[in-house]
Length: 241
Image (tube, rainbow, N blue to C red):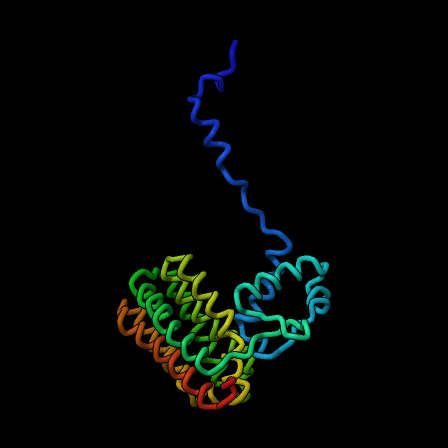
């Protein structure tokens, strides 16, 4: 008896040849994700040097996946190779930072507006938990600045995830690879910003607007959050001319 597979339509064979292999998360991918998180969470600052050997030892991997991950981050513009071949976090100019802030206001504002319109109960719970964590840390007698940067990032991405657009989140994450280290300057320079900078109030306003499904108000709150932080960082004069 002939095999039933012989009776399948002929076009199926060429179609099978066009199917890409299932993606597997390589060691290089995981290393890239870990190093990216250091940048996005603001745990590296502009000018910080990254030792490939030190990163390999810290991550428990060989040099090869670290080199691969660093090459990708250099291509992303999140790291750069200095003239002496050292790998470091780029030092951004004021104009570059202004441009980045303008783009963030538009893209992250849009994501927040969509989140207000599309969020569900699970999204609201996640956003509320992140807003509370940041708020409680800001009320601490001696707030932990690096932790606060990460809590701020967690809140923003909880909001953006509710926009139901993985592509949009990927674009925003690319922006944060560049801005994360700069945001670190905000709280390193002035830890009191947690209580006096207004981020806590704008986060609360964004959460209230998302609960109310008020897209315009949510967008305005996040736009003002980004704008205010950018204005403060520029006013400190720590960016390159």
